[in-house]
Image (cartoon, rainbow, N blue to C red; front, side, top):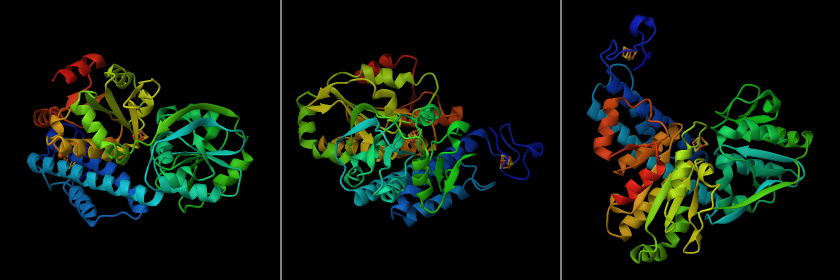
Length: 430
Ligand code: SF4
Ligand code: SF4
């Protein structure tokens, strides 16, 4: 363990052995860190939701209480800390619900759509991160100009909302997951607007054309705090124009409302054996070796199954053609990582239809995690009592062996193994 949050910290530098000076041991520290990281992820989503006018006093009150529980000499009790950790999952579900509602209210009912990738000749701006309101404001400020706006990374799902995709300045999508941005931003000759994580410290080659919003900031970039993107639009005119370089076309927009709209067909297909299983494979992408586990897993899924994906983890698996089932692509892109809410809605909707629990459905969840929003989503799934989730590619370092054991015993939480195909076969055989 490591803790240096109070004055009595060991040797004035940090309590690095369990227990610390106050008596807090590594398991208490582990649950306090889990709570803090879950809160950070939830706060990110709540920030977007608040900007869309969606707030809930109960979420704010919980955030205060949970932070208080991590102050020195407040809570040394594993049971009550685990309770708070699971409550964080419950509150995060509410936050993801608010964010979804905020998006749908403001941008219309999502629907599947084909997105053109690559660039068209002329000035262009790339928008990355997760904040749809930043995208909307930028589009408004580009109106009447020939400046095209392209989504990047987790902004790809913007195209599923009619009021965003119908904007004349929204031209398409460019690029993949966050870890490739140093190369992709280098290659994109126009300005880049980073609205949230995951932004990397820029290379000098493009720092001068990287803009960020509010809490997001990087050395060398320009931080905008007032929604005035005129400097970004002006930069697009000063930069070299983008080349005519069309890429692939992709289909996005399988929001939970779209999938649940087909519920009678899906339920009938499950009953008649035409659908054997649903897989949720997604979350965060990352650069480490071992993340091919998720693409291997997706490729090993049987042809009579659907794969629901979300978050930038989709970029790991979308390069492969999975074919179709019931006239739909087998790989259904549900949206951003916060659209994990949608995967939960689909799962609970199916469970209701089959009069069983989510754990009794032919459903396998394989989560790639990277940062704290993924922690919040995991806590939400645990709060719902979902068992048998696989996470990876590495176990969270903040979970002590004892805490991990508790989660394994209570929720059958699993880690990605060495062989994705073998893990998949074992999951199907259960
Ligand atoms: S809160 Fe406890 S474990 Fe943390 S620095 Fe203070 S004495 Fe050490
Ligand atoms: S899904 Fe996770 S890793 Fe990917 S961009 Fe979003 S926050 Fe970052």
